[in-house]
Image (cartoon, rainbow, N blue to C red):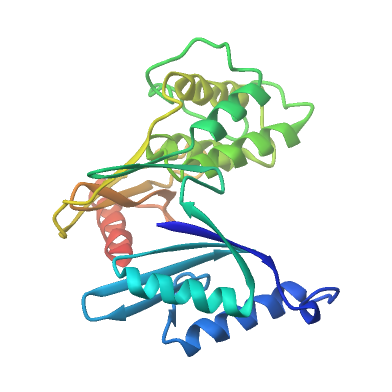
Length: 279
């Protein structure tokens, strides 16, 4: 896995109001002409299959992550990109959009340690006492609780937004973050207190992340669950699921269901339907 950076392009792409769109159009046309297929789920992902050989490019602005199991094709596409653009090879992928990637002989470990510590420092929680759980199981948050509204709700919104990005490698705070994100419009002091508890949990595990092993079996395992009627305001249930490829966690989510379930069985079936769609 390597990362490339486009240092420069032709001058015709610069100074235009639609420069970013034209740059993406030129790059995607080039990759498609070399038999790469654009992913329908993520238009920034380009994949090329040749039997059991696989190559993938992930694009973010002028950074390109290149990976695959066919060294010759990876070298060829690097040459093609360098021939059309000024591309700098930054070597093995180690840091990308706040994600820290550590490579080992048996796989890789992805975390957001630096991002997490910066979040704690910016929130003034770097010296706080850690806790073992991200949320108190006996706490029921609601829109109109007895505590006062925050004077600066923007700080709460910013904090929860950063926690949402942290769930990229911390699935254990997904449920708590989903609960806290429901109160963006009118956050109160009790909501802020619950958010700080999540930060205290992160203080104890700033390096926690996801491990992907090379020798894992290619079989898909999924788990689904529902928490019946947990929303105090709407009485809606929450759906939760996670999917593994072998021992590697690849997909997870917690979301409030769109309608009210009249029984725990109905909530479970709705969660199973949502999980089946993800599968």
